Image (cartoon, rainbow, N blue to C red; front, side, top):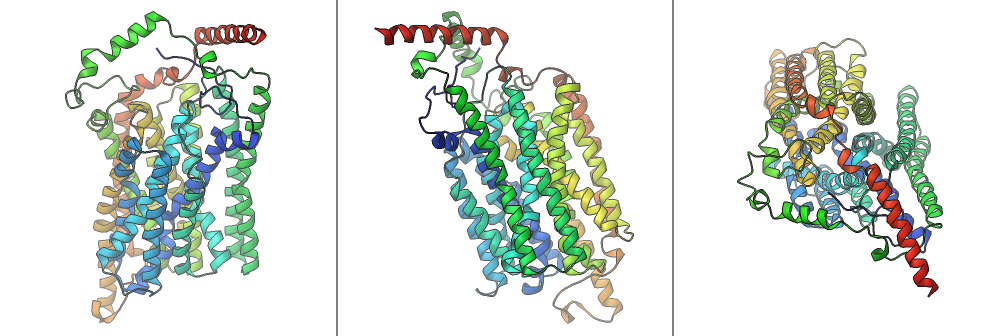
Length: 595
């Protein structure tokens, strides 16, 4: 049993205190926190721009492809190993987590910029790996601070919430590309500088507006939330379509600096439209609260019956509750309840999810990181390669919002297990890999769209499945642990497979020309054969991951047939009790005031 309360603030904090200033209510409200989270998540997608500036690192510092892929692996390692941020979030406030992330982002990427720009002596390879790992790891602190907080604030809408937030991360690469062209022109060194300061600045500006608030438990609140989330979705869809139109226009015509500035201005204005939606919702709550008496918290907190208190105390003092977490590792609660960290990590469901993620996300990250070299090997100009990266970014967004909203709708209406959506996404990803392995004219554009979409769709599904199967109590740590398979898959498939096979083909090309490795500064492979074998392997690995995910579908089908969000909703009996208690409280207060 849980106590039920009535909030008069409209901010979902449950304090019962109505703010006297509307502006303060907006800044403290759940909806402004969502808007701030959108902007922070927009800055957390800098890792997806690696395909744009990686060639600059390779050319400036004289790396071969295997070394560049090693740096790419450490980028993926930093981006996906977020256990530290999760553990820190368990014991510190959200603002502290966000500030750590801002500092790491600036330090990591600024050091890379200094190295590429020649401002410092050429770093050793391990130093470059360390810099990019630190910079990329900062996005885990942004994720943990913003994403986990929003999921806890809107538990019944977690699918759409995850889709929107991860969607903004997916869009960030394309948005930053527009801003970078407007501010710096076609200078990929300066893009690294932009990545260093912009995300850090966003986290610092909004650091105190993101915090955990008790979710609304009034009847019908979920429908109201979904309505607002769909408005956010429409804005982000319009932004994605506009950016895609700009990419097409920039490919067909030569944009001037002023044209890029105009495009970037429109994108930045669209980023702030969700603020207007947040203000509208807070205005609606403000008007509703004018008719609610301004009680103190003690006047409107509902009394918990003695019988319920006794049951709660018995639960707290039960022998099972006293057991050490090490003794309950293999005695987990039912799916959907709050698992301990060890129970979740050592469960069969998590191990299956880990293997499917290793295959799926590992292959997708390999494709994204090698887009620059794929375009170069097939003879595309540099500006067109940037278009590939932007297409991946935009369709990354479409995949995230699609998987978030559609999987939520299928789950609520038809009880379709969310892992089944993961299976379909992995099968789609296989097609994108095959199009790169056996390219035809224009196939890289199609594969960029497919890989971007499927890559984006996997993340919200992964995070939602973890929250549903293992609960929200330790979600900060568990969702970060869930993506640990991604860098491992990236290392195996990117460094050991794609990078090694690319260099082998490049060395064959040098041999045919009568040259050796010492004859050239940069090891380059040109032709369809460069990625043929490696992406054939990626397609097979991804297909295996799809088969593995079917095992999780089978194991969880009964769980998803039930009402997995029931515990987050107020029942009809509680709703009637809530109304009666509030009415009684109002009457009592009126008599007291009359005296």
